[in-house]
Length: 370
Ligand code: NAP
Image (tube, rainbow, N blue to C red; front, side, top):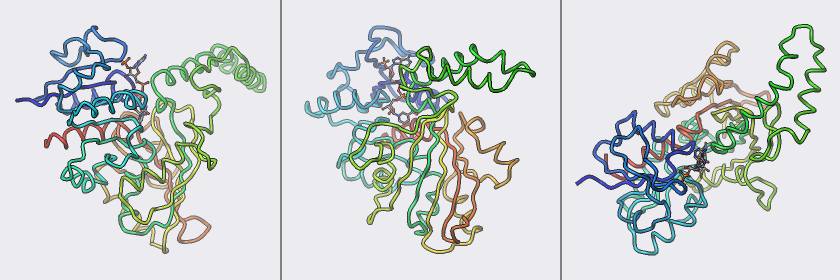
């Protein structure tokens, strides 16, 4: 009999990418899938999946409990509401989730199988049932530099992030485009005129950014033509929660003891898709650059080492180049002037693919033994 899989949150940013990847990889074959929604129950299911049927209410606990696996990309509030109720009624299926809500609880595993398949397999043997996708920046950083951590070369890491609008969700990504359109409408024509005074163009844009006319309902501040150095909520120690996740999740993913210190600043920028990170890596010793390059290249099938030249960087190491691809670009790799044990690198990865949907998609196949 086919396994019964419930899909929740399939029409959001992460869910849409997950759906596309599952179609590309023919993952729906051999599964009986029910599609749920928190807001559109009774409406037709996704047209691209044949026989998808109508949408079921995602708060219907009995309906969810009829499935072997629940896959959700709906968000943390949904998880906090529904997961405890399902478990309380004795449901013993696999819960696979893109949200952060269950990542740090004791009986869950953060999934990123190219770097922690051993941790996942051990958890399956122990009867763990909650498999949770990691924070996007953490997963992308690990895929880029796991080869160095694996060899025991790394003392600590700082990560300065440049995170795209779509990392915040569908509504936020649309708001960035609306802000861009507003800026274009206000100053686009003047900017295109070769003789237009440049400071007039700049002040038109700056005035709009500071006016009440710019739509900022989602982000609370202009993102287009600006940036926002704050992601998620405040922690007591001055970090944001996004920054806190760096060390907490990396160490849980790899099951490291003692912990590897990781900290930095997380910044939202006006990129549409892909999270980028400027890394400083303190090495335990002065490892030759050639060995570092080899360790990165060999670490998994998706990492792509980009030569530290202007041409290669512009062509291969930007969100525009990497969006929509499973490649994890890492370049600008060099020893810092601070000393031979200080390494810097820049990495770009699609936060909707390897940062969210892909580990979840692969976790589904792993728990199903396929
Ligand atoms: P999202 O785009 O906001 O989608 C979440 C849900 O919002 C959808 O499933 C849908 O649920 C509802 N929705 C309301 N209006 C919508 C619209 N116009 N278009 C599409 N969906 C709409 O959220 P997300 O970015 O996918 O994030 C889902 C979870 O994954 C969150 O916990 C997030 O933290 C996590 N995550 C996100 C990323 C990322 O890059 N975005 C990366 C890693 C992890 P109904 O059908 O039930 O209405």
